[in-house]
Length: 148
Ligand SMILES: [Zn+2]
Image (cartoon, rainbow, N blue to C red; front, side):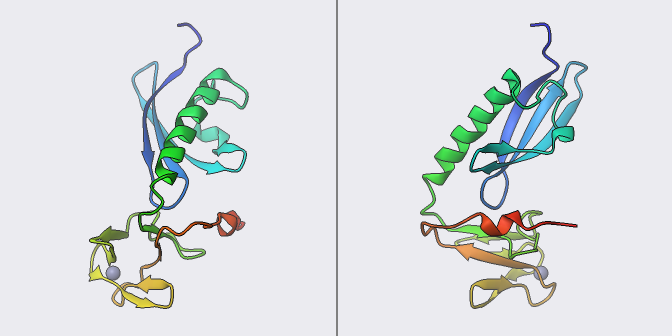
């Protein structure tokens, strides 16, 4: 078992499509987390957020990637379910300000949201979200927008 510097503890699906939080435990008992995104060629993560031994091409990262991709496949099969996602440039879904309750987008603080076109918005705080009704063909193209 030498050479193992961290152990995977948990994989949690984050709001939005294809984003997962990894939780791992280091040898000293401390915990770390990293957010990964499933892309066309596998998972992507900021290398600095992963344990040092989980570098590209390493066995630990390959094993974690398999687990994340398996979870992602399982979730994708349930894509007939309505799913919230952020408006382009938005973050309210990612940080949990907007949740689905009985199939209707709700602002966590203020309740049901008003709809205008495809976008649901909270009239009190301005939180915004898009509700995908599970149709096929949702793309990740808009999630590749550069930030700066
Ligand atoms: Zn609100």
